[in-house]
Image 1: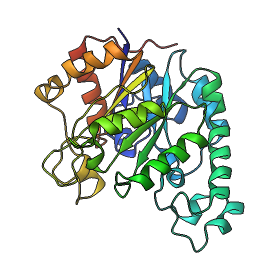
Image 2 (image 1 turned 30 degrees about the vertical axis):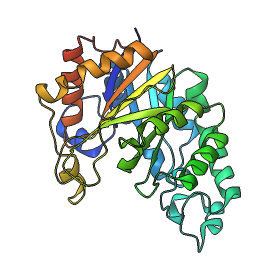
Image 3 (image 1 turned 90 degrees about the vertical axis):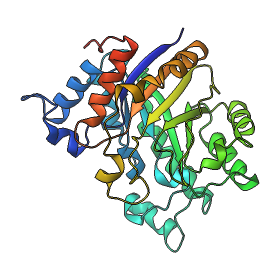
Length: 295
């Protein structure tokens, strides 16, 4: 039976910091991470989607967390085909993005350089065993088809030797007519399929399909079930507190995942106030898991 690890998609979210969840005396950068790691064994790093990480931060994160703690690191936007502002790149790389739509594949040389810097900065996490996976969250515009499959293969080739988890935002990847092919493709590419929980009443809703495509890891991200997912502000989109009944829907699926993968990461992304940490705590209790032990 694999190890189930529960956490959240950020430990630095402004709404979480302002909520009072962090105790007095532990609200600086070091104190926050040490407190979080005493409660949960896994966390997602989302800042790396907006800008390239630094090796210094990776070293500090490793030093401030106990052995066995996992960081799932979100891939930089340019690597996943999202529009990327020139200002998100180091100054010396910005001219290569000038006049381009900012999507991956437009300049392979730029992508290679960005990948080298991105992965190089994360070496301290990988070297200390803290790296869980790299999360490649692809945009809704990545529609199933030959071009998308070719792009996925390019991403896998660039990230050869690194653990990669894939979250699709286009629901077609997990539609009834596509699910088997999607799972087979990710298995072939040795990429972890990310299951999602989200509101299911929208045309863009991704179905809550879970498939184990790598033996080392299975991942589920809980986005909340707000009906404003496609329209409102960030707070509107993620404003949801999971009920015990909603979490209980997942327990049999989680057990099946744990029977097939060495680790199962459950990450709550309903980042509005302290909703994510409270939902993670509730899921941990529901599964009978202990709190993380501080190192």
